[in-house]
Length: 122
Image (tube, rainbow, N blue to C red; front, side, top):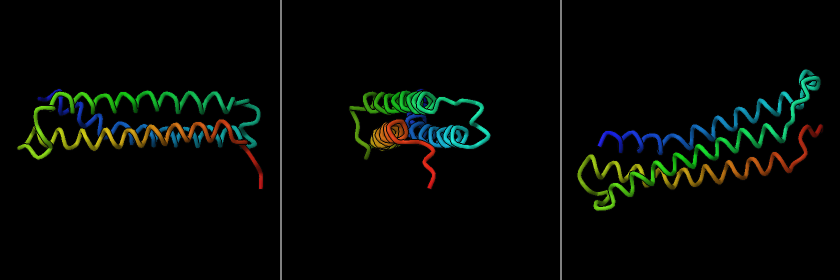
């Protein structure tokens, strides 16, 4: 039961945390690439964005699989079942939906940053 609880919490918070980290590191890479101080560093923008967000996506997939593992382990019950099994299934179901949304957001983010023109001055 303890293993399922750990998987449930990893599944619930993993995707959101990785989406946030992907955004923060992506912002830092963009600033380093586009600022005058980063010009000499020759940061390969597309490579870094792809690596950071690809890794975040893969780890968010791991969070979704952790939630799916909990759902499959509690398949004989409902989210309305008594605690702790009902609570585990409820949070794991929410985590699976949320991780799907976060993985979609990460995919759209990396596609938008790689295929868009960086450092466009207004």
